[in-house]
Amino acid sequence: MSKALLIARREMGAYARSPLGGVIIGGALLIEGILFYYWGLSQKMLSAEVLSEFFYAASGVTMVSSLVLSMRLIAEERQTHTFTLLNTAPIRDWEIIVGKYLSALGMLAILTVLTLYMPALIFVNGKVSVGHIAVGYAGLLLIGSATIAIGLFASSLTSSQVVAAIVGAAILVALILLWMLAGEVEPPLNDVLAAMAFHHQNFMPFQKGILELKGVAYYSAVTYFFLLSATKILEARRWR
Amino acid sequence: MIQIRELYKYYGERRAIGPLSVEIGQGEIVGLLGVNGAGKTTALRILACDLLPSAGSVKVDGIDVVESPEAVRERIGYLPDTPPLYGDMRVGEYLAFAARLRGVPSKDVARRVVAVEELTALRERHDDPISTLSHGFQQRCGIAQAIIHEPKLVVLDEPISGLDPVQIVEMRALVRKLGGTHTVIVSSHILSEISETCDRILVIKDGEIVASGTEEELSSRLLEGVRVRVTVRAIGAPASAASGRAKTVLASVAGVTGVEATHTSESGDTVSSFTVEAKTDIRPALVQAVLGAGLELLELGRHEHELESVFLRLAGSSNAAAKEESAS
Image (tube, rainbow over all chains, first blue to last red; front, side, top):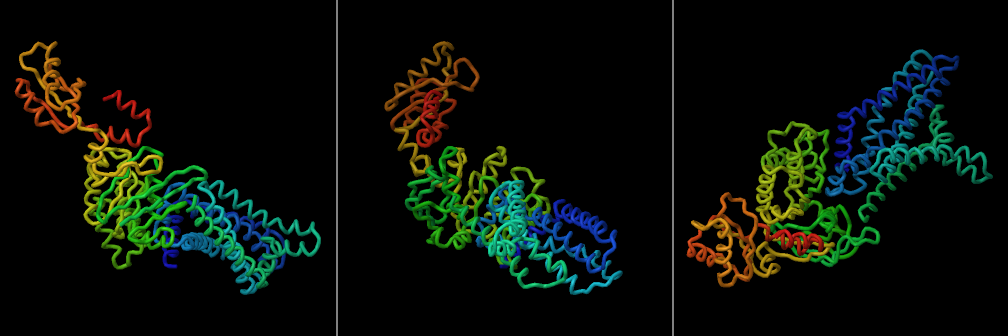
């Protein structure tokens, strides 16, 4: 595990040294600020509703940011041939994947912490509970974690960051749209598809400040599945 | 140190390696020589556990690369054909990262970084970002990361590629230095690099080892004799007759099977150069004959392209061999 942390630290350093980290965080904060102003502050709503709208908007920004953060993780290293250093070091493939995942999650955590001023404004000027804020942020980190895992899996498939971004986005959008499909099919398949949908049924409770084990289990399972798949891709590529 | 038995590697239906069997001893510096596409990089990637073999067994220090790849990787330092350098990191920072990644204990990391920086003449570049280094220094940095954990085996894939003549000389010296404490495998398609730095040459063609030995062993086995380059000056002879007279003198030496006039870079009408072929080393007899005939001997030595001839015959295509024949 210490090797995974070593890789995570190096990756965090790479985000900090390149403009990428700053651009992603700055861009995400700008968009979240605009959405917060438009949806939250310019309409007459209860403060709990404003907070819910904030988490809804932030979930979208979090998904896009997570995808952009993760698309480079393996693809860029393959493109610049630095992946050989990791591939020929005495570490296991899962340590490489976990290290990369933790670095993007760390960046996402920094981005998420920097958005705290918006709920803080609602908290100070309105009536919302700390629990609502905490659960909403837990939801953001969980949905971000699952998106990073999807992006990392896509990144492990190719040496092109553009292709990785397209594949990651395709998987993500397909998972999100499952709730639309759920409305078109007969029971019990509709319930299965609705439960598998990435955002709709699984994120809504977090947004409203309701902590449901179902949502936590769903995002944890998606994260695990795609990290495991990425590890298997690395193992398989050694045979090619 | 290395035992490779019946190794095969397929990329889809295409056979890149195999059958390949070879043993390399502790402390040897071995050159893997072959044209582009011969399978050098694939063989080295398998050895470095970057790729897995399709069939056969590869053992490093008695450990199988498929069964215990992590244990093998601890014993290997690998420089691929493109050095795996993070351009955004500084030299010292990168080497410390590589050291930790390869399992060097934290308390020893700083000491090892200083040691490899001194060995590869990177000490003054310790704080420079890698992206600002010249190609030669980046190559040194690549070697430094490969030896940071004091591996038993160092695998260098074309370490001299793209270097200027001064850097080539320095790199050769560095590779020879490594030979004292490590087993070293160097791949290249550059003949002089292999012959001047390695104890033994393995010639690879179409994924198979087609010859193994020192330069002299390969030459004597495959060239069926020796080729000697001679440059003489015929004192007092008319310019038109000088070359003919010298050729007659050289051809009269016992054991000579052929004399061919070649282009000379020396100035003067009466100076001429020849390639003399013989079944045995007749250099002393040639010296005596030239001096005995009253010719001035300007130069005499084994043909500098001898190994190239061997290489082209072993590893090259029929076209390359034909070109070499017509050029000599």
